[in-house]
Image (cartoon, each protein chain N blue to C red):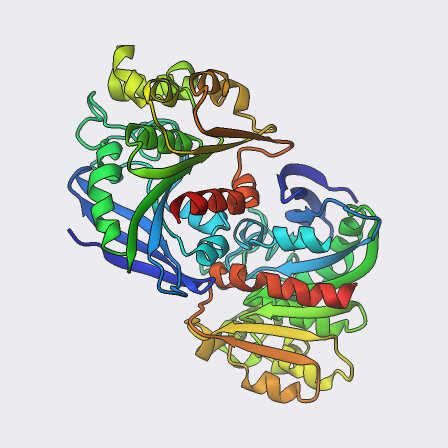
Length: 276
Length: 276
């Protein structure tokens, strides 16, 4: 299991790297990006997972997230996987909200998706072993965060593994995919029409049934065009009653990376406080 | 002379806007981006021009420059024009370093370029009037900066109008285009083979003959793959002898926007000190 370094740029004294590797889980070549801070003391380095939204690749956050200054200051490594399996041999769909670029961070059970679309296993088993080996002086501590479909991914992965991740955060996450159009379309295709199979991939269901959850911080722009239909928080907050969830609504901010850039300092401070 | 607002995003309490307008100077439709800070006091707002490099549009700096935090803090408006005239009726070239995306911020005299390629006039006469009208409480003060081809543009425009701009800065600028391949190719096409016509578009020649110049700050990555062949500073610094030029070389940093993001705070602090 090796990865080929295909690009690196110095940024805020750290390195923004890009790797290519063959994933056995996904049965295709994948790329991912990794930010490594310059070590300024002897402290070990924790890892944060960033999961992007529909249509994105590993590049969106690395180029538009404006996070490197704070990851450098706090000595955090950040890994940015792609959002689905990729390649001409991988099943796809003509629409932007299904298939390549829209893996929804689950393990598909239905054809033609089941062969490659196993992002959950990739992100929780195969890719971690590879990424750990690339971080000098890795502390062993991990947190997870994401945007939109990636916010759903961060919550689902974090809530299914509550002892593994120290903290979870999300920008504009799909909080209740079984009840909104994006989630219903994707889950029907990847998991089949039986909604019983959907429950373990829905953050609202997962937080209700998980006794102890890591601290969760969510930011949602009030001017986000997807807010009412795809991202509504009511069911999730009700299910999360009594758990450590902060849900912040941002006046005037939309679904774009400009919102992420504006509040990434706050999110990384939250994770750092949980990781250190 | 009007511009249509086609996009806006809240970012760091300010607004990242995009406008479309018809340019009489360039005889085509153009877009440009404009960052407006939220006014936090009654101070008037100065304007900084950002000029991008080869292949770029108005989007590169707005999405990858990570400048909005500091422009918001210092109450600076920043305008990001496109890098050439655009459209199917506008002359182009199959290569990335000539034609659309490669206007070189000059007024072309040769066919087929002379009709549309008048970026100098556009940026110094037509577009300013439009942009001034879009800044609430504009202070009347301007500075100019850019990257690579846009660093050349910022220096040429700034040095040809030394009383108009309070300060000039550049990342990895083409400092002596008449003596490097990028400049020679573009100037031969746009201005013809007679090198006498090139002199007024070369920062090294301009700084030598300009008695009083605004403060100039230049950052150059030492790991920039274009540094030796396209961006060498020796002739420029010799010509600038005795003038207010700081030239900073950055260990390990390359030609990418990751370098710009890492040092944009420093550049905006420099301009702010000259503008306020």
